[in-house]
Each structure stands twice: as structure tokens, then as C-alpha cells.
Image (cartoon, rainbow over all chains, first blue to last red; front, side, top):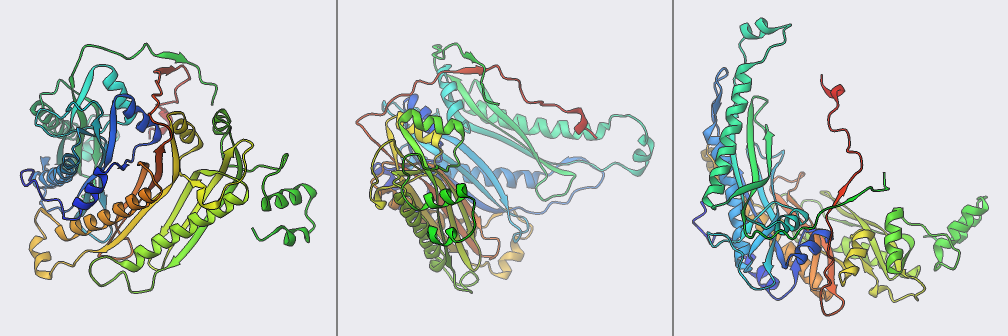
Length: 265
Length: 279
């Protein structure tokens, strides 16, 4: 999906052209805006990508734990579409990167199996004119807040890309015999434990693969989200998200933190 | 805002009568000040040499004629115009209220926004502020900003000033898919391009309008942009996109670095684990 590069609708051209004239827009708070300036970046514009996506149907076996590959693909493709479109907008603005990226999924009552995937962030450019794009020549992306971005840069690391992995997993129901057998006892439910482990591992591994492709040395701010979306209680999406970073320099310019006792309550 | 005359007829306690009377005119020395700022925010303002004056509001409702949401194509111009009109009127009323108390700006504006099938309602509430001891300025020069007093202080310290609110909104129809297409796509993973394109169209018009209003205020940037977007809950094939934020401009020639320091708070952490929540 990511190879058809010019799938931005026509109208984006005009808005982005206007932005090139010097006005910037950003959903960064004032704090974040000032911190981005502090590390030598200037915001260029709010960039977005979205895709409204219809997820297919996959049958599940009641008593079998399995990955639902069709749903995994849907969740991954749709997010990838949104992310790629956002990156294209950023590239068009000549940005070095996108900070404060939010990835959201919205469901609406009217649309069964249809969901809106959206990626929003602020495109930034280095004020010294040196390109900070990642090794693929694309703007770096990061879901770090302005505060986290500032701190990260002070410690000599630099973000390369927002990486993610997802896995939609169906967890088997327990048979009546098993349920009765363990009633009244403290026991681990190994089939549940194992299914959750496997799904989580799959999601994390996929995320790490993306980071490896960017030659990253680490992933910071990893979040692991578990969502049932609209599939009922036994089908869960495991989504892991984080910012892949590389060590850009050994200089740590972050001062020793000052310890404070706040008098607020 | 109906004038102090009506209230004085009632048998109100003296204190309340004085407060009500002071709502009408510019704040004189010793007059009562109302604001929804916290103590910290008020201190922040004073550190800049500014003071809060009064809680001011702006409110406007525009109707959307029935039937506009269900069928058609392209932009739902009537709804976009209603959104635009309601915002413009609410902001203008806030300007007027703020100018009447001698303010130079309004900070911490809460924006409440209702988009329903029959109307668009915008209500704004914020604290009017001015540099201590300055005179009133014309209403159209008063700035309205949804930044908190704290953000306002920080922004001024870094050499920037808020100029006003920039707003843009657009509502667009998504063409219906043919029944055949719907059935065919039922079991597939596909992008619903009709909706994606409608969202894009709405976003581009809305963001462009926001940028236009920012340029009209002679701003060089819009910070803290809020975005509300997505299909409308009450109409199956209409999508909307609205964005608003505070327009800013650099006051001097250069941005002032703020040199933040990293701090570790020694306050007690909130209880992270509570065994009673386990069931």
C-alpha cells in the first residue's frame, strides 16, 4: 500500500501551499511548542492522514485459540494507510520529521465493521537547515510529546520512526468440563495465559521488526494496548506502539535534575 | 448583561447589589473582580504585569434548515456557514464584553460547541485581562485566546503574543455506495474511499478556512489546534471537520529561549495500586 505515493486528494495541495508561505499550524500546546523551538526545530504544519476502512469477516472456532490474520491485516493496513498519508503531507512540506503523532481508531454507530483510522501530528523542520530525515530518506515520525522529545534529544538520542505491531487474536472459550473442574479453586487458566502471551509476543515482535528495518538501537515509550473493538470479549487486538531511536551523539546536555518539593497539593 | 436597573428593584443584599452593578461598567479601583483563574494562574499573570478583570462570555446559535444533512453532494454549505456564523458572532460578543470592562484580551476561553441536525451552538467563556493600569482599547483589537493564563504567560516570556482565535469548519456529504458494491465488499478488507475522500475534502476546506482567519489576524502561527472530526452521529452520510486554535505572532525580532530545567518532584506519588479494587 505504501508504494502508491501520490494518493493524497487534490485539495491537500492548496492548503499545504499556503503553509509554505510561512504560517504554521500545530496541535502542540504552548509548552511543547517552546520545547520544540528549544532544541532547534520550527513547526511547519499540522499533518494528517486518515482512512475509513471496512474490515472483512473471519470465522473463529469457539474452542480454539488462533490469530485472526484477516483482521490483523485490516488493522495493520488501515493504520499504515493513515500513517503513510501523514508522512506524505510532511514530505510535501519539506519537513524533517513529525512529532506528537496520535493514532486513533474511531467507530461509529451507523457503520458496522467500518472504522476510521487517523494519524495526526505536527511536522517540524530543523532551523539549522541540516536534514534530520531517517535512513529511508523520509521524515522521522514519533509519538513522543514535545516534553519527551526535548528530553530525548538532550540525552543524545534521536527518533527515527513510529513503529507498531499488531495482532488480532481469538482466545478459546473453556469447555464446560474445565469450568466445572476448576470451580471453587485457585488455579491458573493455562489456555488463557498462553493465548495472551502468544498474541502479545506476536505484536511486540512485529514492532521490533519495524524498528530493525530503521536500524534503530532502541524503542522508547512503548505502549501495549489491548482492545476488543467490536468483536466481542474473546477477540482482542494487541497493539504495540513506540518510537524507534538511534544514538546520535554521546554528548548528554541534560543537567542533573533539580529535586523539588512542590507546595501545591 | 441586561443593565443594573432591573436588579436594583429587587430586595437584594447590598453586597450582591454592588457586585451586580459593577458588572456593567469598567472596573474601577476597588471594584469586585471575577475570574475563573486559579491562584497560580493569577500569580503568573501578575508576574507579567497583567491583571484579571472579569469573566466574559460570548454565545450564539445558528439554525440549520431541516433536510440539509440527508441528501445531496459536495459540501453542506448551510451547515458550514452556520458553524462559521455562530463562531464569529460568539467571538464578536466576547470582544464587546471584554472591551466594555477595559480589557486588552481574554485568556483561558472554554469553547463549547454543539453541532446538531437543527442548529449549531457555540458558547465561549473566559477571563478578561489587561496590563495593570492601562486604558481600554477598541473592541476589535482585543484578543480572544483559548490558551490558559499559564500558557499565555509562557508565550509572552518567549517573545510571542496571542492575536485571536482562528476557526475553520466544513461538513461534506459522502456519496452512497451502490447496493451491489456494499454486498460485494461485505466480507472483504477494503478502504471505503467515498468516506475517506469526504473526510479529506472537509478537512482541507476547514483547515484552509482556519489558516485564512489566522492570516487575516496577521499571525505567523496557530498553536494548540483542536480538531474534532468524523462522521456525524445523526446523519449517515455526512462527515464534519472542525479545527480551532490560538493565532500567535512574534513580538520582537527573535524567539527567546526559555532554558527549561529538569526537575524531580519529591511529592508523594498517588496510590498506584489499590487492593480493594480487585474483585
